[in-house]
Image 1 (cartoon, rainbow, N blue to C red):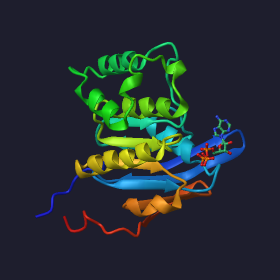
Image 2: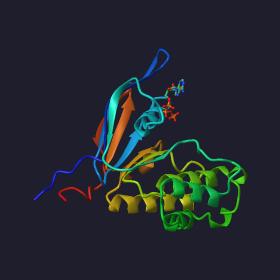
Image 3: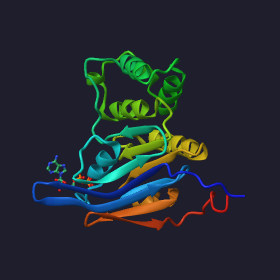
Length: 215
Ligand SMILES: Nc1ncnc2c1ncn2[C@@H]1O[C@H](COP(=O)(O)OP(=O)(O)OP(=O)(O)O)[C@@H](O)[C@H]1O
């Protein structure tokens, strides 16, 4: 018996212009729980604009977004307070999400390998470490839908591989994950590639084996 589930994310007919520049012109995206989706497209095609629109940090001109659960958004530019330490960021975000413990934060810091910077102010961190903190903050409340805008910029190779271990774990736990990527070699990791061109998204199945097929 198959049970119909609500999509994790539905974005419909998203339009966004900056002045006369129509960047999004009716973009549609549906993501199911447990789906890993790549948004690909040329520089300037509107990928970050789309994610901001879906995350609700940018007002759209037209269109609708529906989420089937809690959202986590990791923007391209870390939004950190440079005067606060890593630990202070974790504590404030945990409080904002009303989390009773920092267990998940500890796990993520360890997995991304930046424990030794916990007492360091964000302003003194390297770009890659700031990005690790940015990603940790997006994942802290264990969201159901994750939007990641080139989340591994500045990561060294080891951290990049750990990032993918983390995404695999989320995938297995039925989280919906949308990642903006430029890297052709990693496209086989995804269930769906959504091409953004001329303001619209065209989804196509990635070449990988579909572990969820028929499940
Ligand atoms: N706040 C803004 N004001 C004016 N124009 C903007 C603004 N934000 C984005 N744009 C323009 O919208 C277009 C799409 O930008 P966006 O950053 O979404 O592209 P992208 O596909 O993510 O690019 P990249 O691959 O280079 O990261 C670009 O032409 C950009 O200059």
